[in-house]
Length: 82
Image (cartoon, rainbow, N blue to C red; front, side):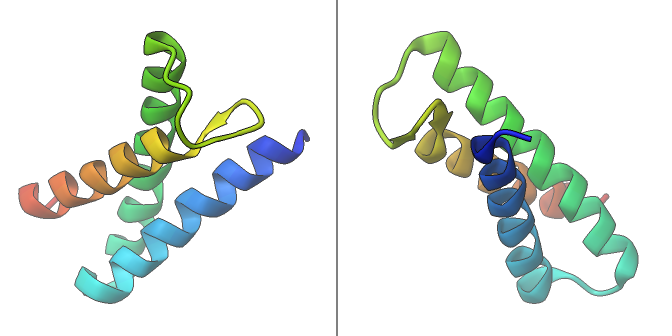
């Protein structure tokens, strides 16, 4: 497994866990937040690649864009109360 993929998984899990500790209520919320955080991180990575942003890169990983979209996805999921 390439190191940047491991970093992506680690960062999305950290964001999701911190969001769960802040806003979560039960174990189901944790699973939903982990999935939403990962999907958001992957979407942010895709946006970074698609638009060619060069800010916040760690190797091929668009950390800034992926982090922002991941946090936006977590907020959206919590707002929708899924």
